[in-house]
Length: 197
Ligand SMILES: [Mg+2]
Image (cartoon, rainbow, N blue to C red; front, side):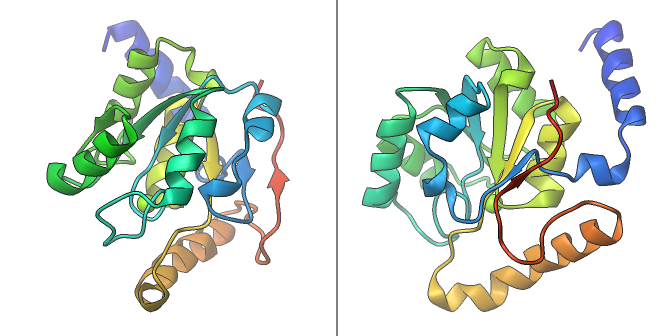
């Protein structure tokens, strides 16, 4: 990173308060499968960086569902796609990415911006035309907002038996972020915050 870039991103971070950093630009009431080409084009998004665990597949899934394959085939017609996961397993995440024929990055350490920047750079798109799509506020949304991306929060994909383990973490994040001033609706509903442009 150049000195100039360092200064710019540091000053942007200083200008954004914690509640702004945790505020998604768009909250979907359902899983990523509800992110349609219409919505993508409405926000003029040319690229999507996708979280994998519980955004595309449940935490234990080793392959993509038929619905997800169909979603990827439809979505790649209108926007570039990259997978960026905090997971380190090339066997599992890499296997899913290869089956979907999508580029991927492992071990992203979100909310670090480094690997997201790598994906956005590879897409060769302005950062504000790329959305970070994920199920978690304190990793996906925080990382995306820190980089100046459009951010989309989706409902997690969980196996019925996994809901007990998974939801409290996310619910805690939502509660904490509300306490910090982020407006995440208690009841699921689609909403957008002010336009970033
Ligand atoms: Mg996730």
